[in-house]
Image 1 (spheres, one colour):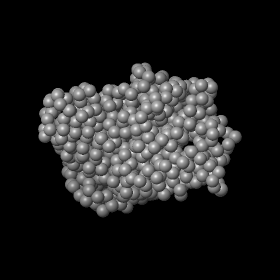
Image 2: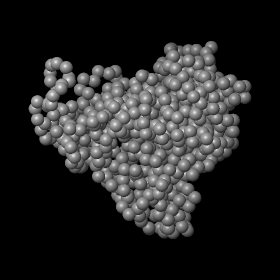
Image 3: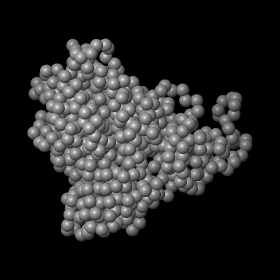
Image 4: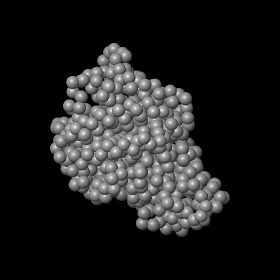
Length: 621
């Protein structure tokens, strides 16, 4: 078995890649929004999550499975996965800031899981307690392999964080059972919810056990052959409608599709399967062009938590599940490592600062499951779709958010042959390829990023800096891969400054997006903006952006939000809708429009004040 900590102390350690990922502790984030998110994650979100492991039933269910408690099973059949994601978050947080309390939580959880695990390696509290006679008999909706995947990822995280071998032992016993049944013995069962594929590959990378990789490849290659039993939702729901290599577009349940893509890229990289990688890139291109919200969110339909048809991107009914944003970042990171192309880092940035960042309140104690782009005054949806909540009965999102925030340093920079590539701009320190870089920036509020070489490996090497597609970079010209390359014999004390253009811009939708025709949105740097009622002096629904609207930025510190940069846009106040009769007319508005100002706040900061009306897309007057 390979060294437990692995050569990369982070979520992803491919055996070969164009860009080599760094360990979480190779990057220190000292401020900015990402630094703030990590601070509140540690101080507020993770403590809340640890409490919820008991309150929600995740830990008590496993005590039932271990025969150590009485009572009824609590929650959904995939309740175990909440604990696994929480364990992963704690492990990565321990990598950043070692803490005996984290070590104790991982050790105690691992011991409980070992006691609950059956002698043959099987572990799933729902099926052990509620349906012991149906183990692996309901894979189309059981989430047994899905839960196993999150266990494997938690075990990899604990091992790489130096938190011992016990959790890894539990994970390997379960993985060995899956290999025996679904690879050696020839069972062609497939979990209806993809996730185990990417986890099996990472377990292979840690342990060197080839059967884990082979099982992941088999599970991916068997999709599209009708092997997943009917769930009542049709074959598209579980991406079983076409073989993975043949599919051209993302379909149905967004999170399942995106986790499947991550696993597919992992398998492609480890097996040098160019066709499998090319198929994922093909779907990525289609997804970005036709099924991605301006925030980077994915999933246009509440029904089935699903992608819709091409250009079906409604703002008010957008689902954009928080877990889908996380899965998208996972997929794009794998594509970036495999290809070295900046377009994947661009989408990571868009998703990270908007769809993902909006998922958590400013104080880190409340979460969105769904991330719409518009909220009306008379919203009457259930609690999942209203304001952020402390927790959910189906709590897949909160611990998923925590594990990504704890590992954010992993996604900032990479090392190549004689190069350091910076993908996301944060203040702090980057250690890569023998170089140590100090980074000073107030990004995304200001566009200047200053690099100082603290130490250099000697000889000539290249500093690769991503130039976002929305910006210029002064005299720097990015290559076809989206990066500006500065090669020299760097010496300690050398500096380099990157200036990105953060001028606010008005963005219009593609004409085929029917739900957005006649509307526009505002972006500034990587941030998408939205308009909240609390910032307007008239009814938001009666405002429209004026033709050629002038945009002005104002830096503020807002109650409930903290520091932000607002954008004020020239607007027109339109006549209100008539109180009676049909909302249609054959003539022009009877009353003239009056000049006004519409004030926008970064989308990720919405719903931290009054929870009122909000919209990203504004009509154009």
